[in-house]
Amino acid sequence: MFVIAWIVVCLRTDKGPFSIDAQGEKDSFENILALYHRCGELLLGLASGSLVVLISSSAFKNGHLPWQFASPLFLLALTVIYVFLFMVLMTLNYEHYKHDHSSYTRFKYTRNQALGFASMSCFFVGYVWLIIVVTNGAGGSPLTC
Image 1 (tube, one colour):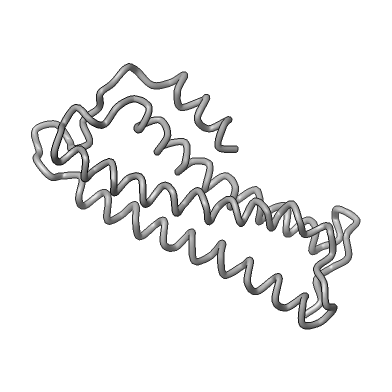
Image 2: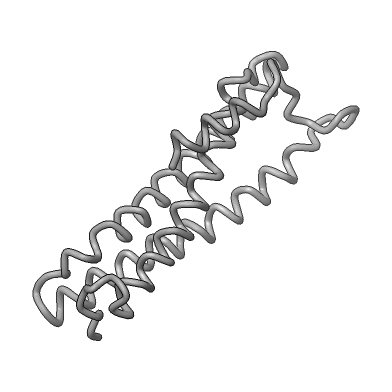
C-alpha cells in the first residue's frame, strides 16, 4: 500500500522544495501538525487496540489464532507502523523546516503523504478484510469470544 500510495503521490506532485506554512503565515503549520497528531493517535489507538483484543481473546480461548486472521492483522500492524512513522517524520521535518525553509524537499513531502494515505488505507482494508473473515465470508472460522 505504501509503495502504491507513494507512486500516486509522486506522479501528482511538482518539484520542490515545499513550504510547510500557509502562504504568508509564519508558523501556521503548528495547528495542522497538532491535528495530524490527534488523528494519528486515534488511528494508532484503534489499530493497536484491535490487534491486542483480537490476539489476546483468541489466545485465551483457543490457544492460537486461526490462519485466516493473519492478513488482516498484518494490515493493522502496518497501520501502526505507518502512523508512527508519519507522526515522527512530520514532526522531524517541521523542526528541520523551522531552521532551513528549503529543507522540505519533494522526497519528504511525497513520503509523508504516502505514509498518511497508506496508513488509512491499511486500516480500512484491514478492517473490511477482518469483517469478511469473522463473518465466514472468506471460509475462515468465526472468532469466538
